[in-house]
Length: 417
Image (cartoon, helix red, strand yellow):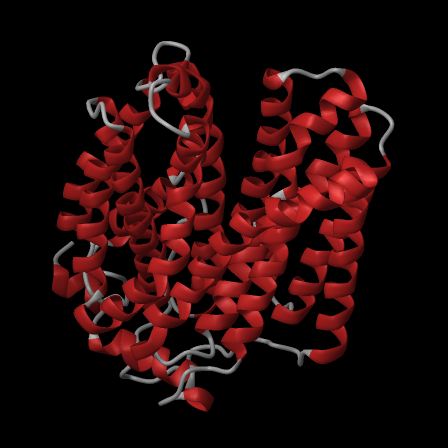
């Protein structure tokens, strides 16, 4: 089908290849930091002669998150100013270079510098892909694609983390090779990604008519919800291995499988978000998200054995699967197209800022009330957030894209995708 025919049919010029490329690029963001976690003990031994090696090696894991949190707003402004595609292509290329440097660099400080650049690249990929989804897919189609994006990211986390652990058993440099998957992705994004047509922008502006010309006030509430959810969520990777060891002497492998189970739940629910969110307000789904987190964390904190912990992880994972597609859809429905990059960059920033802050909060709580107490405290916090959203936020139903000659028809997203 030619470009003209495709456009006349109301579909993106890239069709299915465009959709698949956006989803695959989104999967790269799951490799921000944790993929190298299994290699840290071996890295510490390799750089044993470096001062403060214990701290520096752990910073290899955390530095990308900080770079994402503080770099995302800058990247978001560039996306709005320079266009989505140039930033995405440059970010994927930088991801390949900065991520893979651990394969050959022998200076720990140099590795840390490139890990900072990796964070900037991830910020660009996350923000640009979500902005492009918002640009190309209106209304209910957008909800479906954002759900697919969340699902692909969840499955990517399971696959890349498992592969990283296997390669770390061979060499501490092994996990850094996984970042080279971004090399072919660079060419795919250059070839298949395109900027939205003017009609796309008209549809987006019409959807955000009540906030056209100004940054949406709703954005700050959404950022607060993302940050709150990440405070709760990151008590799983930071505390669960120790908790399972206390409960049943479960080792690192078992803990990894338990966290993977939660990721699987997150991915499956994300894939179903298009159906779940249909005819339901964004507020209702936001409340449901935090109720699921509260129920799941209550089960984990009250558990006396592994089965109840696994059940709690499944429930909490379902809540996380609803979180980002719902809040991104809600935000985009109220944001003028010219400000989408900046608005969505705030989601990226608060997401990783919450992940960074969560262990700083949970560790003192753990010392005071134990790890089980951390999960019960997190459950109580999630319940309070759910009540606050229910009582203080208006319905939040996204407006459908208006049907005019200037606005294309909804894009067909294959159900099997």
